[in-house]
Picture 1 (cartoon, one colour):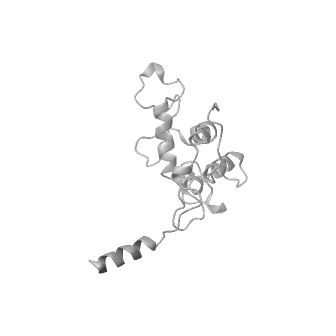
Picture 2 (picture 1 turned 90 degrees about the vertical axis):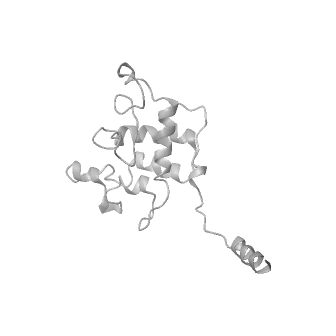
Picture 3 (picture 1 turned 30 degrees about the horizontal axis):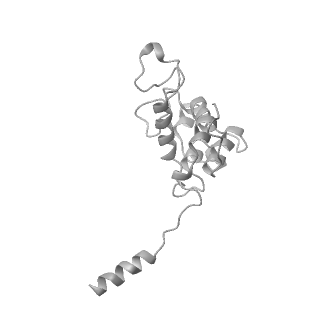
Length: 156
């Protein structure tokens, strides 16, 4: 029994490295008002991440919707759709092995700039979503992933 206590005590003393900003720390208001509009504008096309078969799926007005009737397709995103978009983004918010940035940034960033392979580039004649590392919308993704916040009363 004493041996078990020593082993458990030793394991408890081991700390796993934690990233400076964890997924749970990312601001939902910043996502809703700054990040989500970028994803809706750049990623939510039916042939891309508006497709229900994609691991990263983005709901958007007049594109893919979650449970809305046909006459409501142009309505603003529902709270549930926005929450699903946030959940999808959080799934790509951690650095991926072999990349210095999370896949939310690495995937749409052109490979020539250090980005990850992205099927969208092949679909669109080798042109990826972000072909300039200084793109202001790419900067929005980066600052959110770095922990930036927004007033909760913001409007997209």
